[in-house]
Image 1 (cartoon, rainbow, N blue to C red):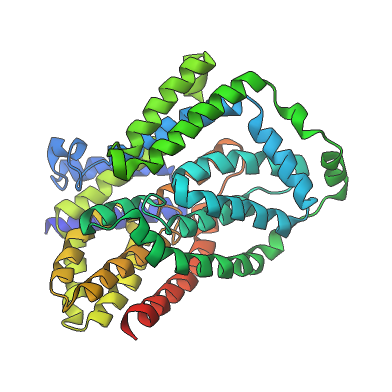
Image 2: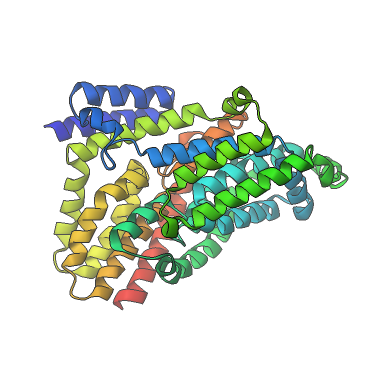
Length: 428
């Protein structure tokens, strides 16, 4: 009975989030409160449980990077990059989109997709403002490319860190098994993006001429501060890359980096904190609690057990269920808590595999489905929520369905390609 109530609360809340009849932050807070009143979340443990509560690693990673981005913004770097990108693309809409998507997709496997989005979206907002074109299509395309590109490595997408830890997979394992299909999917996505966004492309020759006449170097307002910030940001990125070696969580690295950057920039604390996307952080907390209710009452486990039980000893069928099931469920439940919940179930299935290669193939099927499913809806992955929050703050609102209509198509295409890849490489 508790599972039915938890699922009902989640579905009703999701309806209001999707239709945007009520502000999404208010929705998740009310839904989390209702689950607490009915005892559907594990009491105070919701603040401490790794799998049934708020994922503080995600929250503090976002907080740290928001502070860092806010300080870097003061140097004029984003305006410099915006002018540079506009001039390199000569203001041509699709060429500009490909350039921004390429930067995002290449950076995401090494920075993680959330960090990349927080760095690229401010640049995108500025270049679109310079060219007097709508920013929404470019931001959506970047997020979709980021979620695809981030799937290539252990640190590129948060679900991969969870899977790598549970399955004992290394950074190199992800490169060997995930990177090939990611490259192919990205190439297909470049063509798909032209098809999806072609009606949104605008070219304003007068504004392009103005931008082409600008000197991008003049956009840098404080060169000395920029150097100091770049040193700190570089060390933060190195810290992310050494996660598997030094075992320091990215959230800790981001917070330390934020503190150091505030010191070297001699930043005003109140001004920096005003740059933080507090509504986005609160939304994540509420969403984690909502999903925690589904975990605590056994809803997600029941769905996973049913799907796996339905395939029996057919391990290709199990891989198929993991690819498509993870893409669908990950799209609606946020792929981070979904992966954390399903990982033990997949581990049990892997233990029944006839050989290690088949068992590992199931992990890759799981990872591909969860990562590509992160594009499914506006709340399916952390990068999606962050990008929409940044866009809204700058007056470029992206609605739930505006994002989701592109995300669903991208997820369907990328998941189909991932399923074909799993079949050809591991089972054919």
